[in-house]
Amino acid sequence: MEYEVLKELAKEAGVIFREGFKKSKSITFKSDIDLVTQYDLQIELFLKERLSVAFPEYTLVGEETSENITYPDRAIYIDPIDGTTNFIHGIPFCAISIGIWEDARPVAGVVYNPILDELFYAEAGKGATLNDERIHVTDTDTLKNSLIATGFPYTKVDRGQDLEWVLQTMALILPETRDVRRLGSAAMDLCYVAKGTFDGYYEINLKPWDVSAGILVLLEAGGKVSRVDGQMYTLDENILVATNGIVHEVLVEMMAGEHRFD
Ligand code: IPD
Ligand code: CA
Ligand code: CA
Image 1: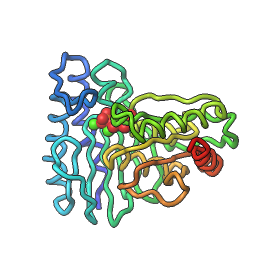
Image 2 (image 1 turned 180 degrees about the vertical axis):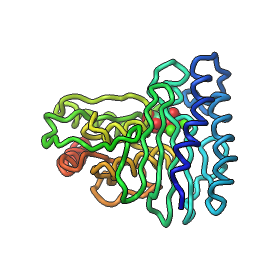
Image 3 (image 1 turned 90 degrees about the vertical axis):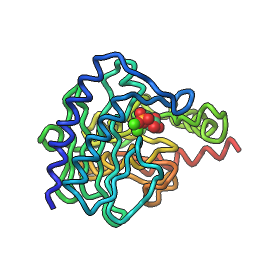
């Protein structure tokens, strides 16, 4: 299977992305804080059209145009703009993410930030690259020396369990690490663990299109991904923990300490 075409498709879609980044946008509200622009839609429609030709046997699951999240045996998950809030506010940390999964395993993925011109790509068993150069996770072995990324779910506005989890986990992690960053794109966060900028990343309430490509980039760069209890992560899972592999256990254990707030 010729997966490398993903790189070309992401770059072509990147032309629409770059144009939109500079222009004023028409914004629609999925919720009070979950925004979508005409560029999210344009990019997704472009990618769906091209991917349906290149990969006719696969189900395309896109954030903006697919009615339901499904997990078929052959799936391509598309996030046309991961980091839409950054895209709208002119913060250049946002990306196109396309991940191909077969039988619940990632087989190929691309995360492309057209503004910084960073193209992350991985195929299962073949390593991960940034602009065609091999990348690898850090060898940091303590949380004290770790820079950890995270994100905040849109569900925070409900002031429910998700917000509680975010705040409790932050209270546990923040004092134990070098620092915590919230940059605003889950796909990029995973790739930045893969390239050794961050040592770890965790987030609640992610969707398959946020992480389908970034997970493979990270695994192929030598990293580790799991559920919050350390077990295997699946795309319908609520919380993802991702690290360089070395600090994984200690981070997962630290997060389990949230129960002391019960
Ligand atoms: C969001 C970004 C953000 C994360 C949110 C995601 P979107 O994706 O990845 O970093 O914190 O959970 O939903 O809405 O910009 O595609
Ligand atoms: Ca997203
Ligand atoms: Ca998106």
